[in-house]
Amino acid sequence: MPDRFVKFLGTAGARFVVARQLRSSAGIWIRMAGQTVIYDPGPGTIVRCWAAKPQCDATKVNAIVLSHHHLDHAGDATVMVEAMTDGGTKRVGLLLAPRAAYEDDSPLCHYVQRFPARVERLREGSAHELGDLRITCVAAMQHGVETCGTVYSDGEKRVGFAPDTYYIEGIGERYVGCDILVVNCVLFSDHGPGVPHLHPASAGRIIAEARPKRAILTHFGMNMLRNEPWKIAEELTQEIGIEVKAAGDGMMVDLDEG
Ligand SMILES: [Zn+2]
Image (cartoon, rainbow, N blue to C red; front, side):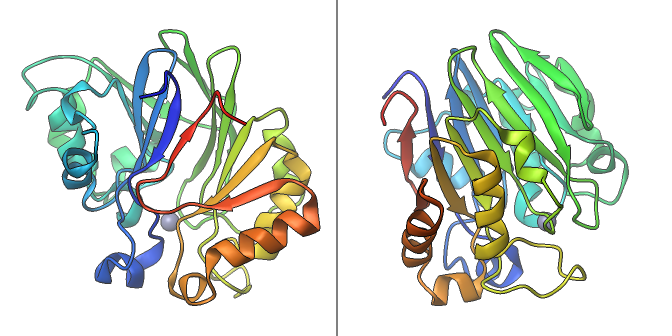
């Protein structure tokens, strides 16, 4: 395994793809600065961790991060906290999520919220240290519930995550300086601010504003899958002049490559 990498245990977005498991809805496994983070552990994350080759040891996670508490991002949050803390017997690890994920009706059960050593709130501008890994909330998104965009930095590499949101003017600029930018592209076309998700054109705007070395699209809804995300990624690459890839289930990105 590389020293630092991002592994997509799942790439499903929104309810129809999740319900049918057309793509796995497991979260993203991040390994940087000797720390392991599971990001947005949707339904099936615990299963995909152990089914992965090599296995992702869910009991060795150092932090669990939720961009927001919708089911496709947090369905396995409770089980992952139990795994990280050995069923609450070890007071270890960091749980990081927006306030709403702790307090509102959320898949993150209240009883596990006292298990981790640290429970912190993501809010715009907040910064959280995990050993030599720094997690910063660079943006509050527009998504109906409190949703946070984050950047992970080990001092050398920066990886950004632009989660579910409707496009906000200039929001991509918050991610300037990232080596990799992961963008949730749920929709194939704009459905207006009442369906606050990105689609290829608005995802492309964010990538163009952020100018990362590489961008990765993920979290695909039904119409994105029907329209072949890898083709859309190729078109965006041509249009923007930045390498854009579509994530596949199990895809690993070595942060020291490319
Ligand atoms: Zn959502």
